[in-house]
Length: 176
Length: 454
Image (tube, rainbow over all chains, first blue to last red; front, side):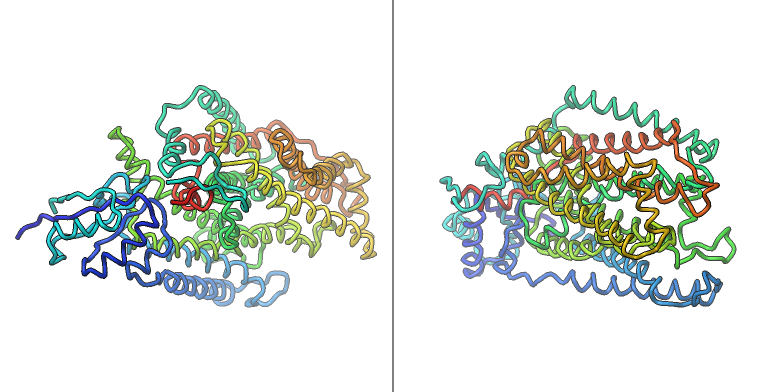
């Protein structure tokens, strides 16, 4: 099996040119692997056909875990495991449990969501990313097209990229 | 690309920068060897830290009896410093979270440094309650909901001091995560510019393998927005809960329902003042005048007028309510604050916090670097006195006149405060040297709307 990955890389100078180019390239039947931009370009996810991020669902689920855990913890510790008389008050009463419940909801909700994001995006200190062009974190927008995933010829794709405003087009191969 | 300058909006970034200029301007200081002024500054901070560590060692070895506390004044500098630092720690997450929700783009060039300041200030704050427990290392587990003495007695969830533990821990963790999330794309920028192998490795690990894929940005932006949504009530909750430490007690002068909003406003007030102090120095040292402009300072000064005025109204309301309540002890506590032996502390607080920020109504003062710098320091002195007034003057004359006392700080009170200053400035200087002080990726998003159109 050939483990080599062959890409055609299109470099764009301007985000508006890039935004106009994406639908035209996709309409011509070319599959774009992904676009690498130095800053979040708004509206790019729609043009690339990406769905709205569902990170809010993760935040909600983890947040609810935090809420339930906090309520259970306080009720069980002070109400059942070792009830203590503090100022003659009820063992279990809602108002004093509000601050800790709120804080744990926020804490577990945010950590859970960010954790989910890191796992989904494969972000970790030991991650070895595939970098197409070093300038993509500086001032260029880089479009990567996997040649194996496309039936069109390399020349056709190159022409398509250039006619849609790519300032540079070149081939990049990776070993794995 | 032709350059178009908007005639309607004040540009947030001046000097018609290109995307590449932004990377250059901000990464330059990370890539260069440290400057002489930086070396001098870090040497001074480390010396202060060293002296602080000595004082901390004596405090821990001999016990907190080395502080000036006495039978009547059981809380003084330690808790004053704690509340002061927590207050300062409010600006960073307020700027990055609340201003993000309000789509205030001017936050973009100041949020990174403000968030770093927040994180270091919260660490400084947390030091004091931990030292106060006498044994720092035990304090770390005493506060957690673990069975006491490893038996089965739990912490008391009815206590505002325990709420504080949860509030500060959560605030610290969420602020740290928010700050780090913002740093990831910028670390990737430094990684991709790096020529030296060690630098490439170091920033490669810090950048978590970020490449700036559109797919990742899509999630990233949602994550940042939700974190902002979660952090907004969190910012407000932290100082609310800190104020509960006092408000839920029955000490005259502390037992007031006005404390939560009044403390939150005061926290934002002092936090913005500290951000201004640090940013005025940072922009000068790192030549970032095009990114942190006079317009940014003016907007922050407006926040200072608003929050300073809220604080002023709170002081007066508190005074009025003490009289109007008809509670003799309460009214005495307030008369004693203003006219008793600590009148000078009350007077300093009133001048620094109520009168001085009103000077910002004048445009030339609001837009002057020198006056902003001076006033930002005055505000922080005033806010320290506010906490001192609330804590010490409410305690020093209790219900028994035979136990009335005055508080005199010792070398160790001062030294432990210096410890946190030493830590704060050392940490901030290290941050400013090795981390990008401005959010590069975010600033790039506002360049076009500011100055350029293709």
